[in-house]
Image 1 (cartoon, rainbow, N blue to C red):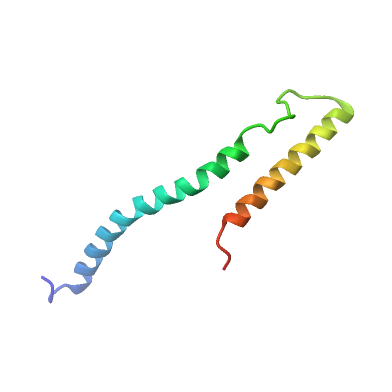
Image 2: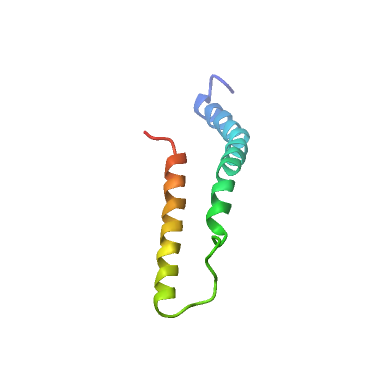
Length: 82
């Protein structure tokens, strides 16, 4: 079978390799990004989930925007630069 169908053999070997390596890559990526994601998901200290009115609401919106910008900056710095 090897000499008669080399493309099929290659496909089977590639498929086996991907099935073996993909879970390892997925688990490693999950381990690396989980702390960053969990830091960005929780409500930062000083911010509440209930709506406010007036100047307090505007200040809370700016604080949330600054917090999310910091999360995005941290995530960007963790990515490989190409």
